[in-house]
Amino acid sequence: MDEKVWDFVSNNVPPIEFARARGARLAYQTWGSGDEAMVAIPPLAQNIEVAWEWPQVREMLERFGKFTRYLHYDKRGTGASDRRPAIAGVDERVDSLRCVMDAANIDAAHFFVQSDGGPIAILFAATYPHRVKSLILNGSFAALAQPWSEEERIERRERMVSEWGTPKSRIVDFFAPSLASNQAFRDWHQRYERHAASADSLRDLIDVSAETDVREILTELDVPTLVIHRRGDRIVSIELGRELARSIPGATLLELDGDDHYAYVGDLDEWMPAIEKFVTGNVTPRPDPKPSAAQVRIVTLGGFEVERDGERVPTSEWGSRMARDVCKRLVAARGWPVNREELIDMLWPDEADMKRLGARLSVQLSAVRRVLGGGVIADRQAVRIDLDAVSTDLEDFHRANDDTAIVAAYTGEFLPENRYDDWSIGVRDESRARYVAAARRAAEREAEVGNHDAAVSMARKIVAVDPYDTQAHHLIVGQLTAAGELGAARVAHQSWSKAMAELGVDVISFDAAAGS
Image 1 (cartoon, rainbow, N blue to C red):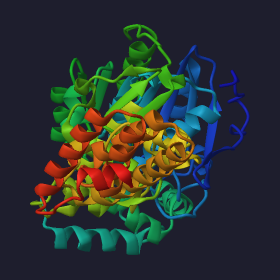
Image 2: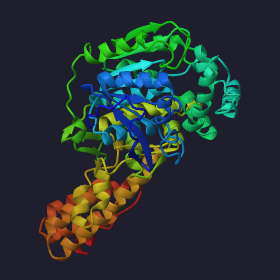
Image 3: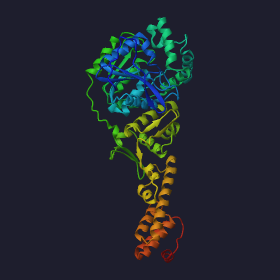
Image 4: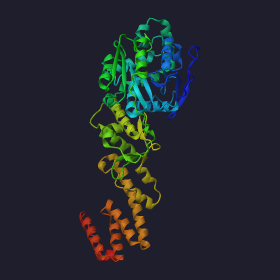
């Protein structure tokens, strides 16, 4: 990120810049003079340009710029970012965060997170730990615990959506109750709401937030963490902040008095000095291995493994069998999208709570991304492997365009350990058929020119994957006989007879096979 010291004396604000993220432009701003980079992950909805208009917001942003090089951005479908395509899901938001950091040339940063930006930061830290120096979770959560039924939740959501950006809006009453009687703030905030998100987008944003759950990876985080939470927060209960502090190893909890959810409301001196000290003086130095340049290859023919720079990734690094299964299924799709519901049904066939399971799927996708160093493209409907980021032996096999290369690329059956999974059968059969056809053509060519040993070798490759292939057995017997190896030819005929006997099928006599 370019080091810029912004002139906060003027009324100007940092210029809007844009990062490209899978078909959309994400708006971001950078400023500040500190040595440490800090990235602010957006809450439910915001507008980074309009936010500077309110004095308390400006004061908070200016203070961050005094001791950090600060970046904040609007997520897809909100604020100054492109309003189309649709609102992004959790996994897309993780990818968007990476794209924004890359665009701003930030390799690693401290993360300042408010509200429902917390799960995104947590997933990002689990996926790209080398890019996260610390987490500062302000009024945030791993999963929203809502005391009402789904019907009540929808009713509350629709009320919020219908009032959004109008004089009836009650956002201030709940998010900033200490300013509820300040009519100037209410008027400004209604305008801010309209600039932050449309009503339809707000509905989707609320649903994504309600469905998110990253609790199961909290204990796996290895990053300095400061949790800040107001005891009377009416939007995110203090108990959810305490849950974060209990579950993240080594996390520090700073509890504050007050009822406001917005960090900028109230006395900044209650928490800003703690962040400054945490970032500039108390953060444990962390190695920056920058493993992003690793060459990642996924092997599926003959068995499953992932290699980074030629070294096998140990099974323990995956965290769970489910993450490996997701990776396998995505490879089987060969770059085509796999519906999220299919992945959920594959992992949890006996469970029906799609919202909760969707959050659990995001956790597994985070593990896949961590192992692959990215390599996954996801939206709210589907997930696919990024074949521009990783290579697979399956793709190499299907790209091979001559028989010798096809035979050489086939190193075994596609995922033999998943032989009975429906999603693997078509890929396995197609790959085997392509291999057998190539080996047969090669064997017949060698036989035609009298290369008996080469012809037998190719035919035996066919028998190894299909012991009942009559053509291959016949060719082996004939070529061994032509080479003068009658003993070996008779043994081959016996093996052929034994294999076909399992099917109740008789084979032609040895003399007939040897002479034809």
